[in-house]
Image (tube, rainbow, N blue to C red; front, side, top):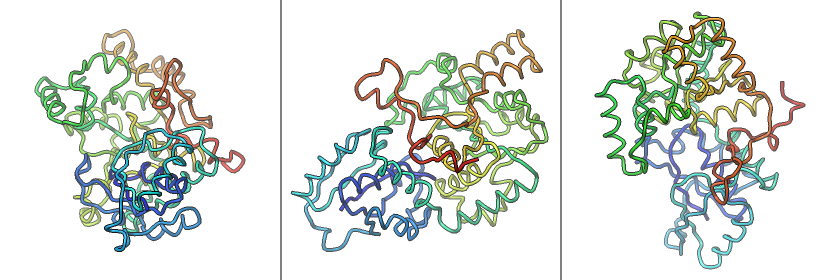
Length: 397
């Protein structure tokens, strides 16, 4: 029997990986316990976010899942095992020898349990069943998410913008472009005192030029206008609290007045049961993002990857991934007066993103020159693009 702790979040790749691991090890999986002390700082349980019965029943033919550890096994011999990240099927088949000495394996929280590539096709498809079918949100989250989607669609097509201009993300990445000195220092101090963030001294200018910073709200506005979206476009901001609030949102809002958040789209009454649970409100953002006409992430991350993969699975719905490194060069040219917003910029931006809009393609392999475990780290996430294992192009439009 396998007990696992995973981070909270609206679409948990760790859970799906552990479903596959349980299958490979011929183990019973206990409903995962969510970490309540990490970034999310959320007391939500699995059943608060997901439909627990559906999760168990939909995977019944693949993996035996129980709600809790049986009482007769509470004092049984158990192993605490940190499985090696990005491991293949043979690794877990070897780990099955643990059953000789232990009846329960406790797996502490960590990411990337399985390799992205070179796994048996049935295991890859099991990961997809877990991700896109079994992990259905709880009924209250599903109801509100779908209700807000209907409200947005009543105005026509809408863009879901995953705007990562949040305090923790800016601090973690060391990105302070456009901020004042006091704000930059606040972010530096936050990074310094956060123990599990290993990188402390970061050159913000180098980060931005390398394309490693989230786009600012103003940059997103310039980008979307250059792509030809009119000012009347409805934009739903899927994000937590934006750093600096309206100070940094004002330029984006001036370009796109129909800029809405869940707090403005839903009533206080509708949000009251979710407002103190960040993972549940993120799940609402996830539903709205998956169902949007266009999805635009201002930065990479688990949420953006999961949404893009889900949209690919549902038929390669339009997802525009900004070329941040290329865009920064254009934005700096605008700042220097060497380029103006208008037809020329639109032409450059459109050409730059011709092949970055979610069209069908095979998953990227590792970066050239990468070796050892670093080679596995640089592969494109399976959950970002489950093609070709889980997508039949003949059935998608």
